[in-house]
Length: 335
Image (cartoon, rainbow, N blue to C red; front, side, top):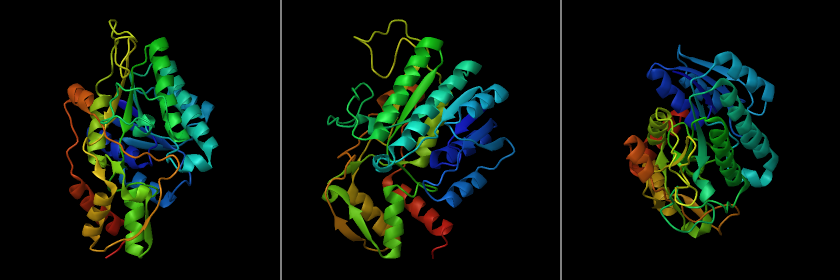
């Protein structure tokens, strides 16, 4: 197959590219290499993904003509759309970046898929779409109409736009709601990276909601395995489906939504303890109130994913934290 992977220099994107090329697929990756976080890390990820079957093109998702020309020239079989402006807190500071990348960018990808009859579009949604939902575990059958950040709202919008294209143009689309992804090559704006760096530097780490928070931490290898398996399973129409009786995660159109999470959330303080144990350093902690746009708990119901592709994440937090800390020390040359 010939794949397009957007967000090629990103945490998940670079790992997906590595798996695809190892399996013999041809991959074109795009990324705008913006400076939301350290560009040298993004460039290092691209170096890691280098392969004779991989080609990188620097391109912004919001570049309508550029994206249109890319699709017309390359004629992809499948698209894995992982590029986006990430970050809940940053969406409070720079909302227009989310409109350009996550809304305009997503419609540009959908249009490219429509014009060239792509066989399957898999795209990144987020556990953030569950917003004010208090019922756990979070199920794709639940309503997600009350996001608490613009980032979450943009991801919910991606799901809605994708459904309309699946319905109108028979484009198979699958949205994946990722749950707190971590591991080697991770994002510097995420808690595992921030905590590790500050603990090693002797700085104080901020503990939101006084430590009473729960996250469904999911290791990168588990995420990538799920993405690859889902990409090979385009959704099909279900003529018997109705709005009144059907799941919100499926449709009469070739459309589906899955959670990808470990399915066993842990307390934030337990995650911090795992990092402390691996580093052999006790963190200096500043306990503070819940922050704007944050949620108390994430917890994935992955039943549908398991039934569809036969895979359930299984890397424990202890294993994952060990792998991350060892990578961090190696990458930043810390003894």
